[in-house]
Image (cartoon, rainbow, N blue to C red; front, side, top):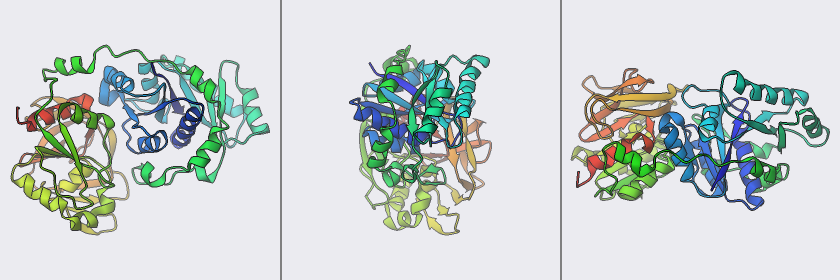
Length: 446
């Protein structure tokens, strides 16, 4: 049994991640085993969750996973209480808003409200967010608030007194400079680079009411179908695949969902390697290059030699699957926003350029033109795109997908195919079936 609640914000930038980390710390200090999770497709916030909770954060996104898949992912977590950090404002987003995730899980919402310049208005904001759920027919319970950037004393008491009896005050996060996480393009810096000081989190945790938060949490329903039943329903076999998958894993390739690695380990053999460190590509049947920050390490990737080796192996027929940053690394070259160009693996007929402003941000749906590494002809898969780069592709480039929703590579297509390899701007979750298809495509018994 793992009870949980969703931490929703009144808007983006309200401090949900800091509040989540402080709550995780407070609950752990109170003796709970906490499983962090993230509503939405983000990779960065979960890295901060893991740095504090010391366990991978679960990805809970209705668009990527569907309702059953979302519940499956939740119930694969470990611990006695799950803290789900929301995305954007509580009601924002048409594919998988925080409110939609809370409704699918049937757990309460704790609202993060910026209190730096208000008391009664904080209560009015919380009340409005609760009443809005009824107005739009969303079946969620806003149980109470955490006041972000709130002082103690008269400020805290004024907020408490202003709240109606049926909205609880679960504590506050004090306004402190050491509770700020630096950011850059794509969002905050990763948890391994800029984890908040444990001492500062413990100090913030003392102003939170951990046991009242634990008491309000509830257990979501079980999924209607198990993971085994889901896979069997697609016509794919559940047993293991005779395949060895090599996954790039370093600061340049750090965007992957825990469930993806779990899926690889469940059905095949998984090994990791670091292109940044110049590791040789392991002996394997397929390579997975997840997203990340190759643009921050472009010259090092060029000089390390691993990408050059990978290009030669791909030209000899080794299947390589790259997502976003992986696509960038599979290209012929990568030019940074400062105008510095580095050679990449040269697998795909594309030259990639970084920009100062993001080029795509959306939930995505793709339809396979022909059979490819991750989908059969005509099959649709859902994912997410968020990137600051664009790809200038050769005129004779072959695309794997038409974009039903999203921008893809050229607005109409995504997924560049070359040799037996595929590079796409879209991140997909294993609940899409894409990684099962990949395993079965490269497996020796396929």
